Image (cartoon, rainbow, N blue to C red; front, side):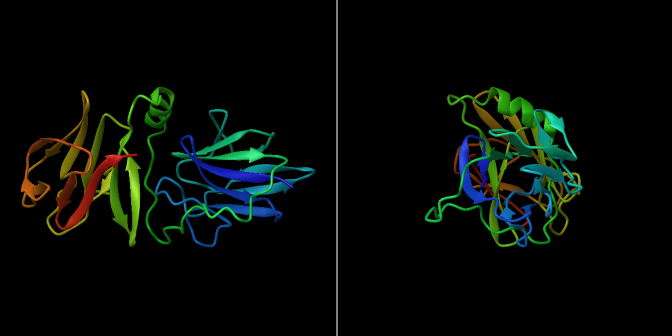
Length: 229
């Protein structure tokens, strides 16, 4: 037997015994291993039986499947190897079995929600510098009735109605880029970019505000919470 452990950073999210010839990995609810993150495609990759071992096979994912820093289409797995998918990773244990009493499993997928594209260079930089003394911050938002956390990996993160915005904020008269969250010493600034729709923090209209953990941002009725990742 062998198992996969889904990781978010250094935190294990769930163990899965490889008990089928193909274990699909992705955001969709029909996957055997569900990874609830918009940077992961609905059907991102599969872990498949490969001779006496296992291999990871990319399924045409938007943000790619990486092993050892290299994007792969198919890769035979070695014990202890890590498969990276956006902000999540899969740890391969060639001899492990998931504990059937372990209640910690990844949450249900996002169904038809659009994949959020991940800046891989920013992600690599954040992972390399993310020691325990640095708090990574994120924006929590509602997607399809589920709360998603989007880590703030870039120096500038955009919110707006454009498909190219880092964080979707759709609504009537919302600009393509309605606001920016900019990295600053000690945290992040929220900058509103004007237009018909106000950008509010904790109910107050702002054009430039230093964010504090727990601050609630509102744009056209959409709610975003600034919190630790």
